[in-house]
Amino acid sequence: MSKSQVATFGGGCFWCIDAAFRKVKGIHKVISGYSGGETLDPTYKDICTGTTKHAEVVQLEFDAKEVSFDTLLSMFFALHDPTQLNRQGNDIGTQYRSVIFYHSDEQRKQAEQVINALKDSFADPIVTELSAIGEFYSAEQYHQDYFNENPNQGYCSIMIAPKVAKFEQQFAHYLE
Picture 1 (tube, one colour):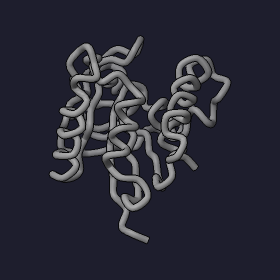
Picture 2: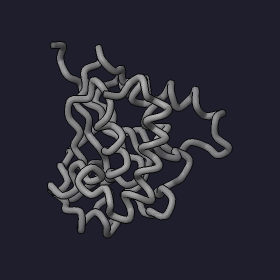
Picture 3: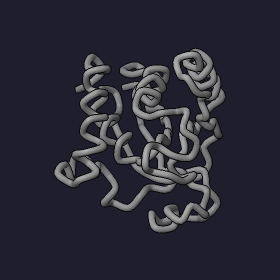
Picture 4: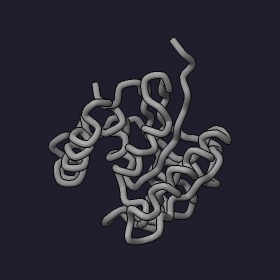
C-alpha cells in the first residue's frame, strides 16, 4: 500500500463535508475537527463563539493512487459555495469559512491552480482561504460521522441529505 497523504478542508458545517467524503474510494479516514485558530484544544462551544479563529474542518487521510488531491479539491468546491465569506447559507461566522489548509507546497500550488481555473465559474469572487496547516484538533466524538449517526435529525435531513445526494450523482464513479 502506498503512503497515505492528508488533506484538510473547511466549507461550512463540517457535518456536510464529513458525510460526503466518507463515501469516497481511497479516503481511509475522515476526522471532523478544528484548525486555523489561536485557542489551544478548543471545544465546539469555544469555536461557536467566533473568538477562537478556528474553522470547522475535515481532515482526510487518503491514498493518492486511488483518489488524487486534485479530485478532492473538485469535490470540495462542489460541496459548498466558495464565494460566501465567513458563512455557508444560514451558518454564519468565521468558523464556517471556506478554507484549504495545505500540508505541502505542492498542495498549495494545486489549490491555487484549481481556484484559478474555477474563478470564471462563479458570478462572485472565490474567497476560499489558503493557509498552511497548523494545529488540528479533533472535534468531540459526537461530531464524528454525524450524518450517518443521526440521519433523521432535522439539519441532517433538510440540509445534508440533499447535498450528499447531489454529490453522489456528480461523483458516482469515485464512490464506494
